[in-house]
Length: 394
Image (cartoon, rainbow, N blue to C red; front, side, top):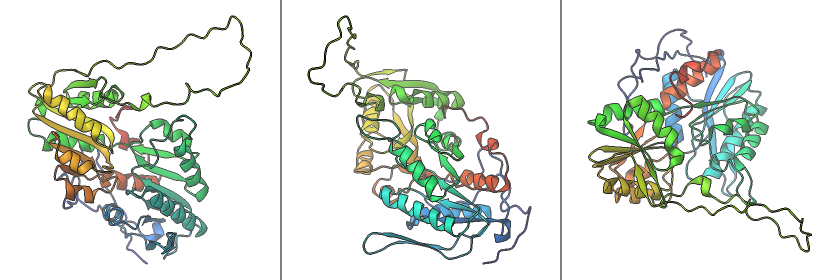
């Protein structure tokens, strides 16, 4: 497959994006992101593939390749009748940089196997560098030891490295320390500029809003949003919340040792059991728009409960904004029947089925920043421009 090489010709006018149906699109790029994508050919040394057989992943991959001015790489990904994943690369990638775009649908394990097998297939096809574009990194919530379990996120990082990945582009990792699990570079992009722009352009009278953290753990992210928008901050705290830090980690269940001698004079102080205070909202939300911000919205019970509390405290309109809209189980129906006015997520995770079930779910397209990251990595340009004015807490 031959493509025309027109180096230096911009694909689109400055600050102008290609609109897409059913996805919130900007008529201009965020103010901090001023990009110019140029056409590239096979001779320029890179290819973009979609590692997922789902329509949502292929759609995101096509948006990225349209912005880059290249064609999507030819590959076939499908499941055998016995459930095995098969990948066929249908063009030469020898000596090229290859970018694999992989979104994570509900069937997480199948998506992981598709990514591993495609990576290994490209490695054995003599690709120069293999870069995974994984907007939502799976198993990121299993990044800490719980009881006698394991840190599955570290295991997945090792598997991807062994399969042949040399670099990863992801977005809003659940814990930023996850980057230390990899023995190759990780670019952890941020979706906050796109969500902030949605607030400014799509929420009427957003100046009368307050940014809300649904638990003290989310306070740093909420504070960052509040400072950028020059808005007030509120934090929900109390017994109705279930924080990840409250999960048992096994430290209070030592193994039983029979007939162990007691060490005289050794008295370890007993820790007092945790007892959460009654539910409370720190901050004024009366008569204002409440915007709850988080990185992942999966099971929505805690968000629905937070919305009810904010409504009782006088908030008249409640938004939920998150980077990754997993929205598993009965989440769409719970949102539809709740006090939440709108749930805004990005297209890092396929959620078209959930949108059909719930009209309150809105999508923000982040293909622009992913395509710019691909262009900069291939051309050896600095990635720092994509993190302009981005704080660690974003």
